[in-house]
Every structure is written in structure tokens, then in C-alpha cells.
Length: 258
Image (cartoon, rainbow, N blue to C red; front, side, top):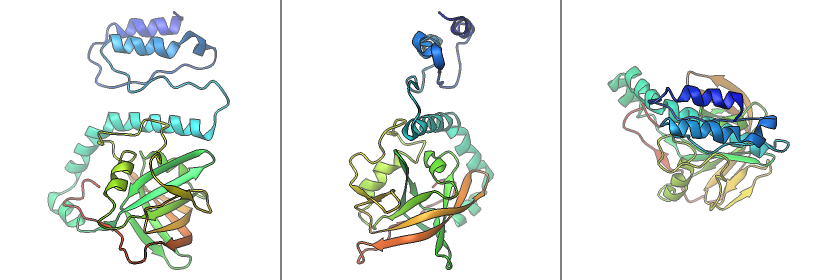
């Protein structure tokens, strides 16, 4: 066993009640010694279950590999902070104010983004038109969303509108990528679009076949808040594919959750 791995193992023998899950990694020549497995086994022996298997980089990294690590880090952060974040939101909001703010309703959308061989998606309801010239809109994107890294200034994305009374299956599928509390989450690096019919837009981002309309957008600016990025984007293309249908509306009871 390598010295560093041995010292970690020794330290872990003294740890019995760690409250968190962990990810272990190694790099360079260390890969041939399976350091990640050694350290991971030590955590398991100490009663701490690793959140996922070892992540390895053996060849030149690709966009898909970067996305894998981005999503792994996002999942770990959400697992560590979900309970505290939920309690903090509830404590910070006056119940009456939370109920009043919840009366601000929004539509239901799927935001899709792609960059070379990396693709991602999320459910969005905090969406609003923001300008006439040029035509623009804003989307609030939580800082812990994996798709956030694909929505930087200059990046392209597609906003897919879900139709009322027929969005349940699509919403359920993509919630796996959006909610830390979801019991069935996409594993890091998984294809978010497996089993979903889609076609590429002119900007390369997925247009869902089941959407009633879609808009192709380019991010022009971002405003930071405590827990979200407010992304302002110009709408450069759009199409209504089911004109007789209306966009689904999302209504809440309190504003301390989506």
C-alpha cells in the first residue's frame, strides 16, 4: 500500500461516526495502484458508504468527461447540504410571506443545453419574458444544477414548453436531474435523454418532440443571487408545434420549495 493511502487508512481507524458520504480519487501514476479503491475501502471499513464508484481519467479528457465530474460534484454537494438547505429556507421565510409569494405562478418548461458531446437538461418554472428589443427572457438556475456550467454568457440553450394535462411523464423523467430529494436520480454521466424523443435545434441543443413550442436562446448576461443565477437570454429562433394547446402552469402552496 502506498504511504499516503496507508496514512489515510490509519486515520480512518479512529473515525467511527462520520456523518457524510465521500468521494476518493487518485491521479497520474497512482491509478495503477488503485488508490481510490484503497481509500474507498478504508472509508467503508470505518462505516462511511462512498456515494459512488471511483472516477478515473486515463485518456485526454472530453466534454463528456468534464460533465461526468461536474455532475458527480453536484450530486455530492446536494447530498451533503440538502437537509440543511431546506431547513434554512423554511426558517428564513415568514410563513405568510411564503404563502403570498407562492401565488406568483409560472409555466413548466424543460431547459436543454449541449456543448460538443456533453448534454444536460433541467425542469424550470421560474421563467419570464424580460425584454422586447431584442426579444429576451430570464431563467433562474440554482447554483447547484449541473446544467449551470452549460449556461454561461455566449452559450446556447433551448427552452421547451410543456403542454397542460400531458406533461407528467416528461416532468417525472427530467426531475431526476433537478431535485436532490428525488428518489431516482440520474447517476453522474448518465444520458438525460435516454428514452426521450428529441431532435437537434439549429444551435445543437435538444428540442423535445413532446413540447408544444420551443425557443432557441443565447445567454447574454447573468445576475447572481444568494442561491441562483438569473440568466438573461436573447430568443433568436422559435416555433409553436401544437398551437391548440396551452403551456402547463405550476402552482405552489408555499414559496420555500419549487
